[in-house]
Length: 398
Ligand code: ADP
Ligand code: MG
Image (tube, rainbow, N blue to C red; front, side):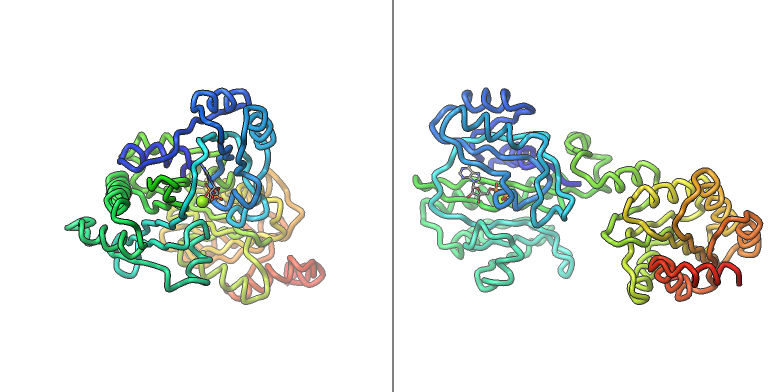
């Protein structure tokens, strides 16, 4: 689960990480009022979306007076920001943060991530702040400082100082950096985070260290015991297809392609996506309907996949062990009878109650294209999508 910048700053500041003075607004009036509360002569207006790269997309504006603040906020509310991380569909701004403008002398990159190879939390820092971590790794890999943290010991003072020295900080800044690192590590471990990123962490003209941006992600599986974090969830920022799926007990990840997939088991779902690619197509989603799926759940999965306007063919691939092919077939028939489709539907069933399942499909009289193997199913899905409908029709007749 991701949260907004202002929420991450709130959390981190509770762990002793300095952040700029700021306030959140849900309207331009509120943003301007917040700015007045903050005072000063320079402010930064920042659209809140679950994405970095807002600066380049027009989501971060420096302002000199209240009118500019009002106008900047007014421009942002309801606007779709397309960044290098949101994908072409972008994300809409519903909340705007206004902060004091900070005098930046230096920008540093700081990230805490789960390193899967060492199975530890790893601190990554770089003096090349302001750039995205991907750019830093590609263009200045030598600037990356890494420290792997032993969970039983935690972040040691020695490690924290080593990072601060490697960044080339002045003696007066070393202890501040150590405090920032300790705060981030504590927030990470105590709140079941999977990522903390401060980019940029800045050194100000008067030698203070401040987090100018903040990003945090959390482990979904731990949210049951982190009620206060779970409440920070903002569904308006999530892929609505994925939110709907989670609410229905389905495991779904939206993708860019046009062949919708309904599969049981995460491994088989991955293999199905691979086979679609191999056949020359692009999957529209990953979807695992889980074990023992009832006809109702299958029908829900079907509706979910169809709600994606990009889908031009649907491939159902079931290898039933715990699942039952007859239930899956019932679900598919139910969904198609309720809402007939004008796109090809390809079904491959195998395993428990397969004969019963096939019978339900053929007796339904629906134009379902059947396939015996996964390879055949993927091929037929891609062919059907390519509007080679005469070919598809021939298969139905077989
Ligand atoms: P994003 O990563 O989404 O582009 P950031 O919060 O990192 O958004 O802001 C982009 C840039 O804007 C920062 O690198 C920094 O240079 C500048 N900036 C952001 N907040 C402030 C602030 N409070 N004061 C001064 N400059 C800021
Ligand atoms: Mg940033």
